[in-house]
Length: 309
Length: 293
Ligand code: HEM
Image (cartoon, rainbow over all chains, first blue to last red; front, side, top):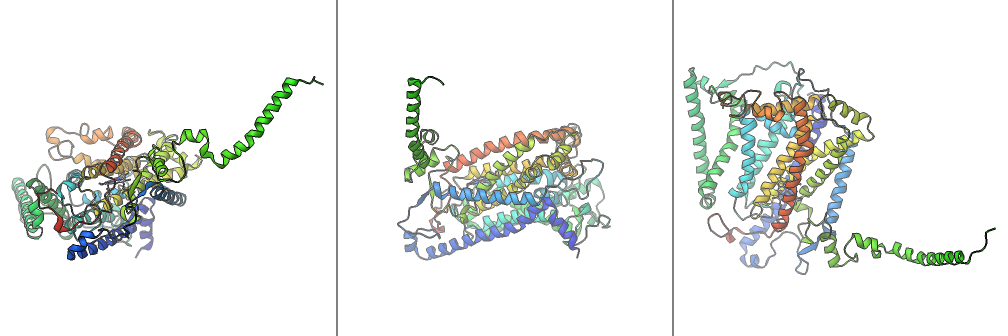
């Protein structure tokens, strides 16, 4: 166990923020879910008791009929904003006094940094480069993420859970989002920051980052397993494998949605539904490809003279 | 000895009289500055603690009037918003101030950039502190934006009528991350150089318009005419890339971000203030119309 190495990674000035995020994310998850559980209890209670549902104020926050529904922004909100500003300022000042922003040697195109890493908030993308060629990892996937985020409100049109924390009423939406954000984005960034060392090799936490470690990197392409050698046959085989897998996955997603979320299927129009299935396919393909690469050394499924998948 | 002058005597006497009057008046103003003409010229309302004045304090102030006069009593609880949107905005303001201060000492060219950072670090009074503040506020802003988005999702606040504002938010997310990325190159050190090299190398692989992307070479993309060339102003990360980064970082992106922030805040008001904590809705109450409420 090389504690010094671990400390070096965590205390690298530009990594300190992601270490902070490592603590903040679970905290706020817990903080949000605590509210969700309170609301879920209230929902269960009201569903069981329609009479109460008619009269209840329907919030878990303390309530008194005589209280005003609203409060003045001055002072009740502005004082909080002032306090927040003071706390943030103090926090940043202390941080800025005790930790210096990094500055390396002057830029030198002839001296490659090893590992050459983007800042931590982009390491999720950089880690995806291991599993996909740059045109997918660096161009297609980021665009799909952005478009997917933008499409969310137009796919999830359920009025349930608008403006309050709940798990019970939004298991699918919330579960899907948290899977995407926590697993596909944050976890990959964490791997990129803490696990990937020189040569983008895999080092477990506490393992020494040895730039001269020899890793026998095996990259198998799927068609090699089937002994296909002709360029055109490879391309056609890969196309069938990729598109076929996508089709099967799409079918499975469609089947699962109809089976377990019938109301969702019923309410969505065909455009919404097609996009939902499309985005889910993309979200599942990433971990599938990761398993293929990390578990079976399979790099490409589809090799053509112009691009690889 | 100068002759005694009656006129002078009277003038001074009057002044003394006036001064004597002024004494109590000044005491009165000191005790209650809100009554002075000067105060009233600045603030357009009285200060005694009345509902009307509390509202006017917010509504008649250009910096505060983004707020409504009153809000849902539960929405000011920290448990609902986590304050993350507001903190993000505050960090943006800090970054603007510290960033402008840094601009006074920084030249965006290969000969000076790195030396200017050394100068800021070692010679400018409080320069190192200033640079650290800017750096850590930038990282913090990424963290708070992500947490803000997580809470907006967890409270379902992207649902009607706030779909559009969620989209404005996604743009703000991109702008925030691009701001950080363009700033990373500016010290012109190894860290920034290689991060930006790695980052922009991906653009080479853009389908059709990248010279290593699918079908890029086939339609004539080279390292000297593709999308990466357009981003960097060259085929490598060099002087032009530094200048472009600088302009994006200090002018373009803050402007775009600022405009979208204005829209974001405006829409929060127009969409009926923030979404909650709203009364919970029961599944049995959802109308069964197709995709609509
Ligand atoms: C520069 C970045 C951003 C700033 C300065 C900002 C600022 C704010 C502020 C001050 C609020 C008021 C409530 C609160 O503090 O939570 C708010 C609400 C909101 N923000 Fe942002 N935001 C940013 C980015 C985003 C992003 C990335 C998203 C989502 C993709 C987003 C979506 C929303 C939505 C939908 C609301 C309404 C929430 C509600 O009604 O409960 N914003 N934003």
